[in-house]
Length: 120
Image (tube, rainbow, N blue to C red; front, side):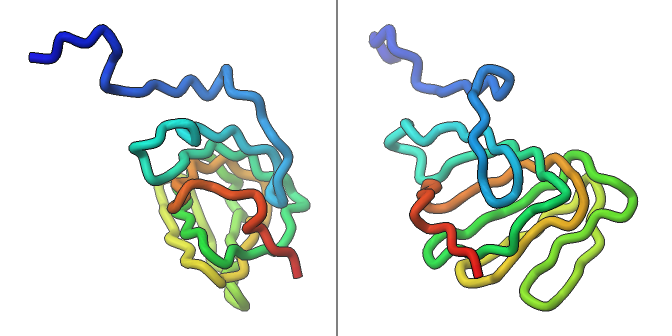
């Protein structure tokens, strides 16, 4: 049994994390400061004017929490209808953007790096 008083777990309350502008809308990012965790977790409110972008190193996994009936993801040249409960894995180099407003949980591996967001 551990005698340390430091907890061995980490908690993120997204309601207290300040949102930052991104090509998709506004992202709240957690666990960037947890050295032993190789990823970041984002809750992103995607706006109707999300910009097509890609990452050279990052892999993103989108989990759709909320979205309109006509919501889609553009993945390279394809438009994929999405709905709550779906997930899409986006490897490095795949150009992507959300079409329509939605709320998504995004797992980013390795940790998110704003220098690895590339717009066409």
